[in-house]
Image 1 (cartoon, rainbow, N blue to C red):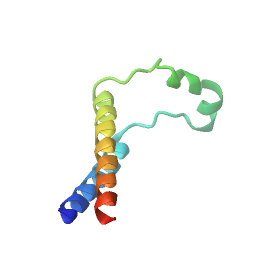
Image 2: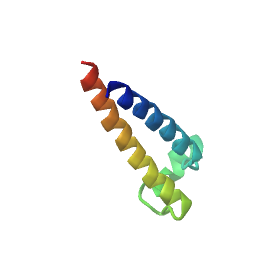
Image 3: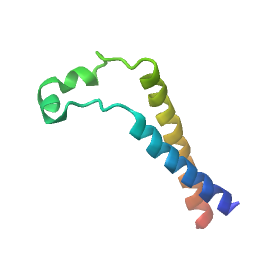
Length: 77
């Protein structure tokens, strides 16, 4: 059981890395943070299509990763 959750944790971590790297960058660097960063924060550019799917997939994979990490930490103890 312990090995199963460790392998599952590795799979979730690799999936999380892949999904985050597939997403587009949402910031415009330092100039975007100073001048126009608030526009991205309050939803003027809403995600659609693939961006929305990747955003929701990231949330799901991250939740699975954290739950699996807590289970592995509990089992190792």
